[in-house]
Length: 219
Image (tube, rainbow, N blue to C red):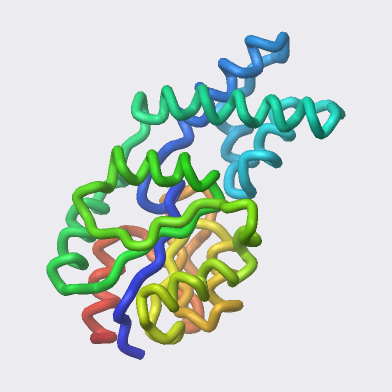
């Protein structure tokens, strides 16, 4: 099947953001008298949206109003610190340059809050024509619900079967399958995906260069 467009997950797929996310969370926790956490804890929580992430970090029952206040404060702290220690994964720059050169349409779909998603993309990925860029929006169900993926396909003017959906989590693979897109997992992210040799339905890659090789066989 010819690949004409790609939807990328963001955190753990294109950009390694966990250190800035973790540092920002610990700033929030210390401000309010909670104990800080280690990186391994944040890795277990990432990928399901900011509300659930902060809820896990707080670790105790609080009112919905108080939780929402913590989430808003976390977003403000993270927005100020998202450029401190995050970085593109090895090989991503070359991969994106080649995809752009080939005229492949590029998009991003993340469960990170929408405005923070756009801020990260503006800071780290502005050299490439990602359109659209969607984070989690209140009016749209988050991944693995396929609603946003279908929306992107319509904006790209592409059939779902001609879109590669690339992410580091099982939720990304489930989104791709639910949307009728081509699922591709990456092993270098947070979702602890591993290569499945012999499984032709789900391609799991260990380096961005392999994505280019796959595209070459499909175009």
